[in-house]
Image (cartoon, rainbow, N blue to C red):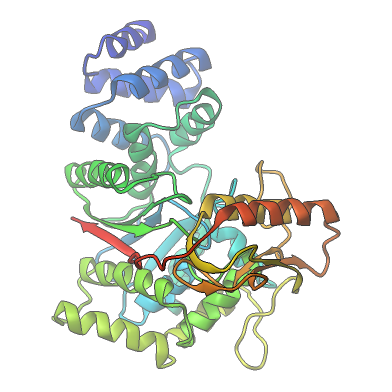
Amino acid sequence: MNMRDIIIAKRDKQSLTDEQIRFFISGVTDGSIPDYQISALLMAIVLNGMDEREMTTLTLEMAQSGKQMDLSYLEGIPVDKHSTGGVGDKITPVLLPLIATFGVETVKLSGRGLGFTGGTVDKFESIQGFNIEVDSKDFPELVKKTGMVISGQTPDLAPADKILYSLRDVTGTVDSIPLIASSIMSKKIAGGAKAIVLDVTCGSGAFMKDYAMAKELAEAMIRIGNLAGRRTVAVITDMDQPLGRFCGNILEMQEVLNTVTGKGEEDVIEVVTELAFHLITLAGKDAGMSSEVLREEIRQRLSDGSCFEKYKELITSQGGVLNASGSPVYVDTPFDCMHVNSPDAGYVQSVRADLIGQASVLLGAGRLSKTDPIDYGAGIGFFVKTGDRVERGDSLCALYQGAKSDLPEERLFDAMDLILEAYEIGPDKPSKKPAILGVIS
């Protein structure tokens, strides 16, 4: 077996055998296959696709290329959640303590943000003292204490995926359903999950721009999950505008606090409720409640203090500092440094989340390369979103930077230009788009 024959087979639209895929991933992991041959096969996959068996074999081989997490110490069925990313996505910090109130124990491995997609690790690191780099040997103790632990991804988890992703990023081979699906699912499977809930975002601020693309990706990941023996559910959520009222690390964590104390934005609550419902059900912790009763109970625990108490346990268990009221102490203080005003009167027709995300990166809330520093206090707050009425001169949003920031003034104006481009104002009120676009299982 040699790599040249494998490339030619996929170039000629043949299905690769399990042995060929195993040979490929082994060579990727040990470095015996050069980058140019790896890139050639990746491009052939982009052009000619993969069938269900190929995708599943590729996923399992990537998952087995490194360490496999053993979650047998968890009570019940180990579950995991993954989001395909977006702008203002602060779901995980709410979701973990929320499902913990139902007895669902979770080990969550998350990444840093890159580009305009925010990272859960960055959000938690905005809390003073919070340790996001937890040694895996300490996971059982933390889970026993609070029912949950969150940590950065370990380098020995699905190492083949990291190598492939870095090459895909620079060779124009990111845009491929088989490669996206196998990348996501390999990390979930290596992470020890037996049941997986996927938040597949859809719209201008997501990788999947329309519902058909999001549905295709969701179905591919579900097929992989089922063939790999993992119960998998996908929730397709709207990302045509930012989620909630803020984007930016501290700003989003402040919004998380609002949500776990019963004062959250409705779109955030809708997404959290739907994802929590499926995680609780798959974990077998629904106590026989009907769908309607369970969803109502989830919302109740966001407002009655139950989720807030668990949230505080999560923060303190990993070294985070709380003030006397139970609110986290942050590493910086966001301050409102500029408002962007509406040039016209009318209704907000749309708020392009990708342009908002790009503006937040300019402000310092995100990074363009993995080594870029983050301004934890930077971000954007939204006074109006799709469907809201504005008059000429009304504030559309506020730009924030951290008190420790020395952001050049021209970056503020560049961000303002992007935001003005993101907001479309028109005479007619648009129909409201739901936060949950579909559920596939």
